[in-house]
Length: 583
Ligand code: AMP
Image 1 (cartoon, rainbow, N blue to C red):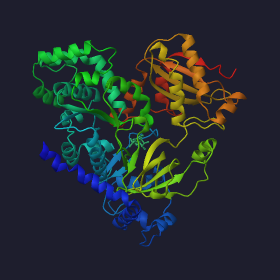
Image 2 (cartoon, helix red, strand yellow; image 1 turned 30 degrees about the vertical axis):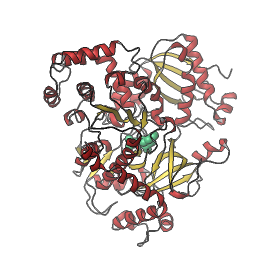
Image 3 (cartoon, protein in one colour; image 1 turned 120 degrees about the vertical axis):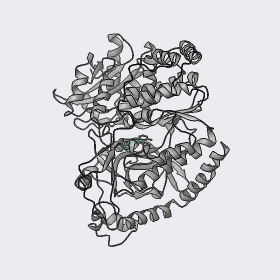
Image 4 (tube, rainbow, N blue to C red; image 1 turned 180 degrees about the horizontal axis):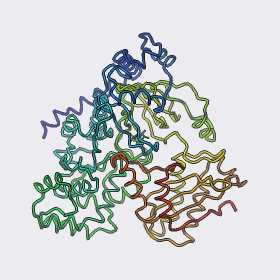
């Protein structure tokens, strides 16, 4: 084991990180120079008139800020098989397919070895810091990870979700072994064609290896909560399988059956042990440490749209710490969580200055009311460099990566929490796009989340919780109004649910919303309670159109054109209330 740790050389990783961040400004300039030199022959860059210049000032002056939509014509050519240098010097051979749950539709983004390497650098960096505080030794990880199908584009390029592209690389497995976190499930389970069967077998593999499991993880925290919600339903079947050493007939995929039959041996003692553990729990509190006594922490992205699941995750984890994973996207990684002791709500991400070139558009004015205006303003301040950001300020982040994205607007808002040496530590704030707006009101995903959290307090005395939520702007009424959909874990009286509705309406504190509500230019907020399992149907819908559980994020606002999701929601409404909060 010691040998393995020496192979990984955590101290060296930390030392390198310290070196890079001490001189973050210089490293950024060099990184930009390298990206521009490596890709100097790319048609996209040639058009920008840089003429060999690689300094940040010329770059900012010549190259425009872009969104994904601006790059679609280039990306399409690559996907269709154009092997000339379009966006990158070397041809792109793989595309990542973003899950599309944040922006509503799937999109291709170029993926290459450099992007894989930067992903692994992030994993190694955060592990080196994490392992100082929460050492794992010779362990295994119960990882709820799922590969999507990899397929070929028109032009014959490999395409899969970014996580699939990473999980299926040999370097990923080597790195996970080196950082003592190899997945306890075989590849056939991770890459199985049916995520429910994969999930069942992840749980089974975890139970078989229960003493060796040192961490429970997933890419986004939602998948862990989802897994243990499922466990609540299938635990007796899992016990039966372990007791008899025979996999349930419900798992039908031949490759999964074949691999699981090698792992599964009759083990009545283990089955009885699990049975006793589960029977001794109260409402599944602490199920994770009860079943996996050597687990050191629960790990996954827990900030942003994952925050609403933290309460449930804490419930399952009992006294096991929750550690937020890193910050990145299909377009590339950005920062590592090097302060693993911070609770997930306060997690920060230190930017690695050599994995891309980063710029920041200042958003936040001095007055809080100014904030939404700045976030939404079409007149924008000039972006600043990585080392020029200011503590406490909010910015939209702009990414230039090694895979053909130049000054790319990721659409995320981050806040500067502090600095590690010269590199900023970012807090994720929200997606920049507005979710809810009718006239002068402006509410983001974060505002919705805060309103839901406040209103969910009304349910707490009833021991009922919000399982998941989404929203819609309904302009079919005059005036238009917000509709919030809730799936809750139990029955509540009409008084309680109507109070939740009023509380939601009062909890949107945006000045534009409040003043519009007062004069009724926005109508009373509507709360619609939906049947249990409705959000499961929405998830199934996204998986059905090519999404993957590993990257799934519940859409927090449903676009009026998204008929399928609207139909699922509306056909499952069990109770509706209109707010009376504004008279
Ligand atoms: P995807 O399109 O599936 O690659 O998801 C990328 C998006 O997920 C990012 O642009 C963020 O909005 C969100 N995300 C990724 N990492 C984090 C994090 N640590 N905290 C909050 N949100 C994150």
